[in-house]
Image 1: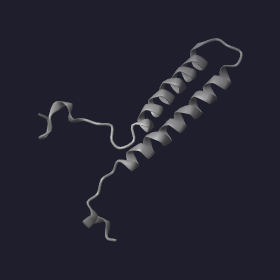
Image 2: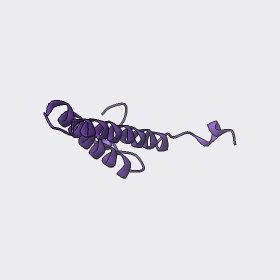
Image 3: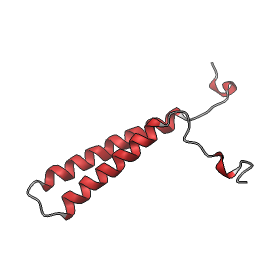
Image 4: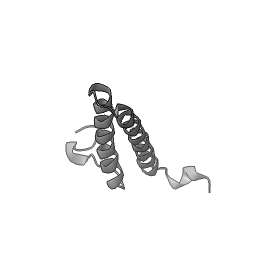
Length: 79
């Protein structure tokens, strides 16, 4: 048990699609970025910029997923 929860009790939160899509975009962006840096291609700049933009969009997905999974008790909302 880890902090009072069973070992298999970890979940991805409310929306599972966001982290899965973010992981796919992370891997695609990293692949394009590294391919543009390490391969000697004529269009290396396109790969580097596209990989960086995909990683930035993936970061937006991670921030959205994290923000949607913040849980506050109703007493703390001061409504």
